[in-house]
Image 1 (cartoon, rainbow, N blue to C red):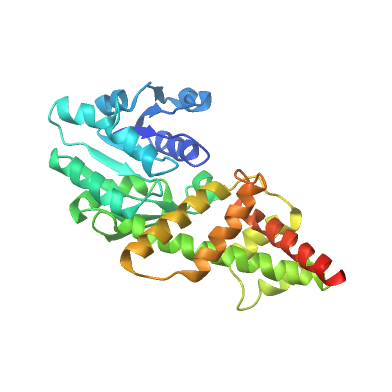
Image 2 (spheres, rainbow, N blue to C red; image 1 turned 180 degrees about the vertical axis):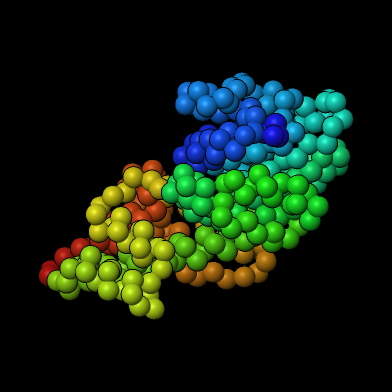
Length: 301
């Protein structure tokens, strides 16, 4: 049994924390919007600041929306670092499972390491379904010894836990994942829009394609959401756009061009402009439909 802190109990963090409690660990919990009662009922303990969580936990996991959120929890007022500076001297391990900037991750890790504590970046892929079923893919950036220490805990959350490299490598891997996934979602949306406008049943086409070379998890899951018009997240468009912003900013720093990623980001921006910040990322099809209808009207005129 390990004393684990968990900060960030949203659509992903809540089921993840539940798996750790059911795995026999003591959980010390914090969330901006209060800790869900069912986690407390399972045995989790609620605390009202990251500093308090860090006082009780040996390993502190964060699962937060964006880079500034992680920075605030780590280094802000009543943040984790206040306990790391003034605590008992026991080495603690920070495991950030958020999807944030790899450049900032390396800076965060250096600040934590300078105090004699360990840092792990371990972003995930698999969405809410993967979190609920403990079937996430977890991409880890850490010292090899530290990775071995946290691997059993990460194994309670995911089926595929891969040590990618040193600090920051996990976040680089997550960016690559988001580049591929966003392009795949947009491609599925284009294909199903084409099929629909051509007067063919998109559900039958989807089932046919799942048996061929076009088969993918995105076609299976997101394609079904598009056809059924089920746009409850899932993974919110505002968060996927945030990840693509990180991807394009990082690519710019490296002198790399990502033209398809830039296009998908603009489509996500159009979703936001139409009130779609909280839509599932499969709702990109709605913007493509609007663009198609506009082109059809122009042609008819």
